[in-house]
Image (cartoon, rainbow over all chains, first blue to last red; front, side):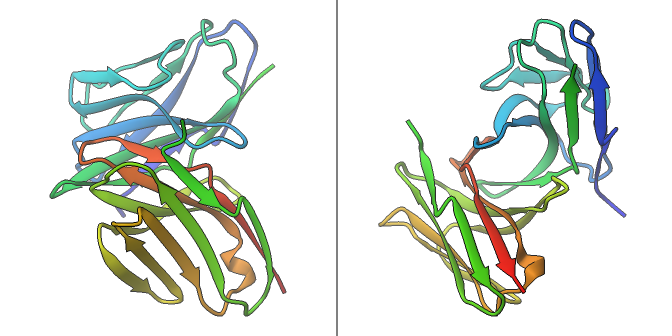
Length: 114
Length: 108
């Protein structure tokens, strides 16, 4: 079955620790994305990558870092510099259909920083 | 400035009712997406449309490009339809802009 996996589903960390969230896709999509979701707000783009070994900052990249060493994998590191890291994190991948970008989402990781 | 507005924010209805969720936007787009987010958090893409109307089962999505407005309809609603429905805009590149969602609760 093709899809996007994120692990773990729930993650707890102490304040000041870096934490890495996993995202893997076997859809053979070139583009991958990380979003953050907070209550009452729409999804906000953290980072995205259109191709291996290349990525761009989204709207709220401060305090986060990513890598794209393989097409299938796009891990997100939440660093201690992120002021309010507790949130729901969603990974997505996409295929361009003409001029339309159809995105497929993973199940998400809920990060709680204590 | 919100480029995309959804209404209502919350909607509670009885099982069997016809449901309408609205999405308005302020700038030109290449496509509009309707997404469904269940309580567990995962998101499923329901529709991607750039004109007219699409139907899948009990779900119907329409878009009026001139009025910059889209609606998602659910016929014969069921408790399993309870979810957050999100409108997202595509401007012809790789990014999406998301609405804040409409929380739908269907009571048996």
